[in-house]
Length: 115
Image (cartoon, rainbow, N blue to C red):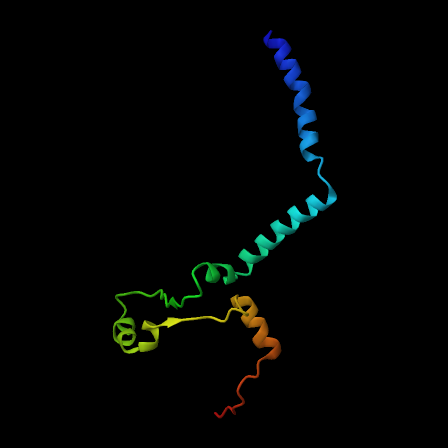
């Protein structure tokens, strides 16, 4: 009896897989587009959806530094701006997009170098 069940299962297996893969072109397109959007969202470090989920609240500044450093112990208590919160623009929700925008549309300040 087990041999018959195994034989039936071995014949049904490939047909079930082929039936599962029998999707329309539109379904493959939607699936691959969804995967591509997810990949690009994470690759470009966009945070628009995350900001919308938390209600567009401002974020606190997170610093990476050595706490035993003399510079950090003297400088950080005096920098009030680092104790505040920031709110990045929602239309430039990626550091990569911000860099590209400044490269193409930004005007750097003009100053002269003197030696």
